[in-house]
Picture (cartoon, rainbow, N blue to C red):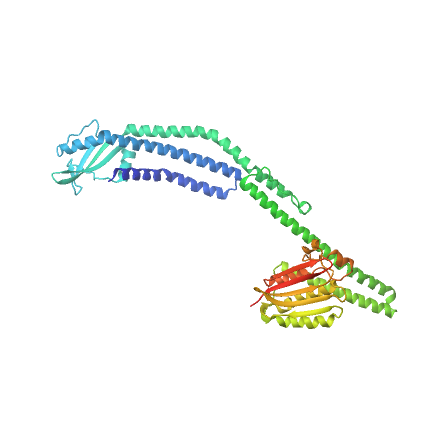
Length: 470
């Protein structure tokens, strides 16, 4: 067998035998760590110390084994090879040097004992047997083969190695002692470093415990953090920014909705009180009150339905009943209805092309109707409103243009926000709750489309709904 291969096998076998107890210890520690919830700092410190101990043991083991391998190789070159050559030359009348050789045994090619004849041991070049002899008998067995009178023979020659093994144990012990001394120095350093590393996390924990609705603008301090902790802090702060923005939007939404509902309720309450005082016997007051209450109730119902629509969209429970249909069907319906209800503006409808789309017919009609209603509201009498339909790239475009009051640049980014109304619409007393464009956007996006706006204050607006077509 190749000498180098024997050495590698010997080292591998010794390493597996040596590491087996440590594997059992690590399994036990792993189970304990799962059962007991230690602090992160403790886990880090324990992990570092265990790694340190393993390194020390490995260094001690490899140093001792390396020493033995080195000495065995040197002993082979200086002693064993000479003894083997001498024994081969003397065979079959071999003279054993009792002061050096522990035993010498020769076997024929069938591995039957030849020298000594009464030898009961089997020939072996097995690495396990070599290790066993080395550990239990403290002897090193060298295996080789030779030829004599054209016949092949095998030889086991062994030597006592008490001194080498004792030296290896001394080296192992010295490395362990040095490692233990280093462990006494290493332990407080690791403990202090671990707690210093975890310090920013503790600060984050304490800060996050103080965050409530009343101080939702609190953020983590990222000045003292580094690397992953800094990234974690930044991510947390960005998340809190989004939460704060959403919370403020929700508060504003609730406040605006309450304001929108408070006005019609106040009107209804006023007319009810007037009916209670004078309207019972005054028919004119009675009719005025009923008409006003009816109008305000319808306005409240319209607002509530819009709010419920948006709420269903937020909860992802909004369902579109989609089908294939020609877009010209609803465009012609809208043209007919618009010309019936609006006689104060100049209306133009141009549908250049037709296309089949897969959509909720009623919802698409609702979205287009919202844009036309807004154009009617914000365009002075005798102004122009034009609705056109055409194909552009992969979309069918419905464009609504008007010559109305337009939208200021600062309001363009906010017009799709819920309950948002520009100052011009409020000052002129124009009706509406500021939810129409929000609903139109929800509908269009729900059909994988786009909605765009262009406007110049005082010159008019241009809204475009872009829907994918078949």
